[in-house]
Amino acid sequence: MNRFFSRKSKDDLVVDSVAVCVTLIIFALVALPLIYVISSSLSDPTEVLTGRVTFYPRNFTLDGYKRIFEYDPIWIGYRNTIIYTVLGTTVNLLVTLPCAYALSRRDLLGRGFFTFLFTFTMFFNGGLIPTYLLIKQLGMLNTIWAMVLPPACSMWNVIIARTYFQTSIPDELREAAVMDGCSNTRLFLSIILPLAKPIVMVLALFYSVGHWNTFFNALIYLSDTNKMPLQIFLRNILLLDQMVDLLGMDSESSAYLMFLIRLKESMKYGIIVVSTLPLLILSVVMQKFFVKGLMIGAVKG
Image 1: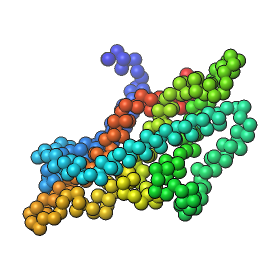
Image 2 (image 1 turned 180 degrees about the horizontal axis):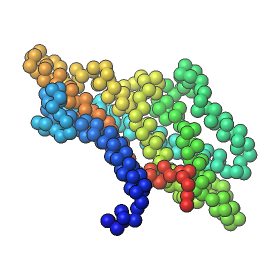
Image 3 (image 1 turned 180 degrees about the vertical axis):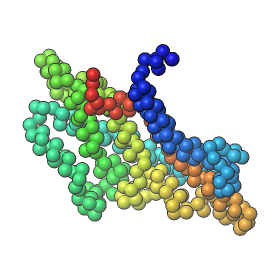
């Protein structure tokens, strides 16, 4: 280790030190709030309200989580969100990947025009009212398709995938496959997609996070409570103060009422953990693909 550092110049050591310090600061900014939320969700409500919780639980308790999972709409929201996320991400990939590959082909007639046409939608759209009227005329109001089809394609993700196809997959590979009699469909499914696994995983992560966190489309297009996603139920709990059903506030005891108020405070943190834990696990599982996907467009030496 000493020999390794002795080979570095003073400038390199300064740059490395600055990079390490910046990395530690960014890590602290990301990790410390998460640690605090987890600690608060496992602490006694009184400790949370008095500000005694820092980065480890005080008076460990699971009452907040118990109340959360006894609330039946949470499970309905989980079910709906999982369906919307899986189906929506599948539709996103089925639309984004062929579109991006077609735009990456230099032999595509009118490629510049189509690229401009798609990019135009990133800056201008019809607005909320025309979009709502269109969804209504298509008969998708209060259906699963209102959550899946409107965000079926993101032009930003199309550009990312197109860049990957252009920079990471050589044209010579396509030419060789065509000379061997490979059709465009087989070329895309059997050669391009296996080589594009990193960007497929990155796009799947991007789209999954978007579907998991979405609530605005549900507010606009859905009216059936049984079709609402998880984020709507969490929003109702945190913002609309619908804690009566969740906590069973039918007791007139002032002492019990104060306990419920304290418990509500700790439940806020538990709800944050419950709603973000699946995405944290997914991010860890797909980390290596995500890091490789971030190198799109980097200078290769």
